Length: 328
Ligand code: 13P
Ligand code: SF4
Image (tube, rainbow, N blue to C red; front, side, top):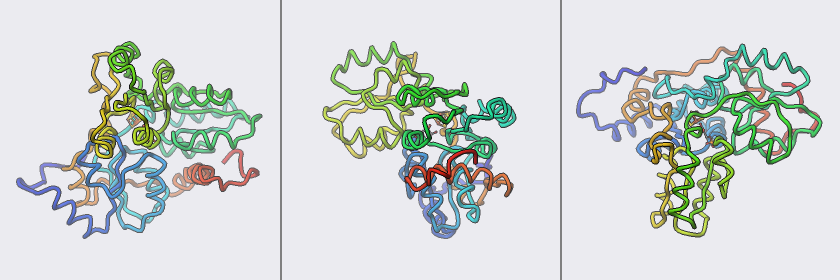
């Protein structure tokens, strides 16, 4: 973890970050689940697919990734010549933790006639063992390009997999991982909230369990939820995803009311992602200053993981030929 004791008292973090980003030719990327200060200082805020694309395209020398480790690793896989720093290397993900590469490899070996369609929320090793990566915003487009008779393993998020399976009436073998944040929403409390705001639609992320999705008027990635928030009619929206995304909604539509869906305690504080919350302005400053902690990936592993990520980018853009599908 970055040593914050080394930050001199009285440091103007905003000014210093702005100075360092110029000096180091750095781009700051942030996910919607980061705190408002990090979202506001970023050059670009986006969902997982958009951030991957930005990382692949940037001509900066340094990518400072305000997000979690699998996102920063994705940036490094796609832009190996760049220095990629993550404010806190401990910023993991419960989905990644649920899917150790050796267990995933054994699962794949037990089902040799299946391809592995894998959510980007996983380790680089699991990406290397997969055939096609998806994000929540690209999963539907990509799934529809896979021939009906092709058997599929979907991991590590069983709720996203289950949602896709139900929506497209497509059987898939699901890895049993969950996002601890979306798992924490309470159906009972959501229905109580809905009683108080009967006209408010509910927008939910597909990482939510089915008992939450079943009540949603809109289901989609963080960007898709944000777009829905910008276009829905009415004055109040209930948001069933990590509540820091509400910052962008309030900036875009200050006259509307956005309410985070509750957990079992009746409020939404238990739905803050504890991994994303590890990143702070202090740590962003320190990682730009020290260019540490850095993401490093062994070259063969990177190349193996890149194959499934490249397929995602091509399939999301609709540029992959049909004959190019199959095991990566
Ligand atoms: P998206 O931003 O792609 O919807 O992903 C949500 C998420 O859980 C990231 O960890
Ligand atoms: Fe992982 Fe869930 Fe946090 Fe996203 S919100 S990083 S899926 S634990």
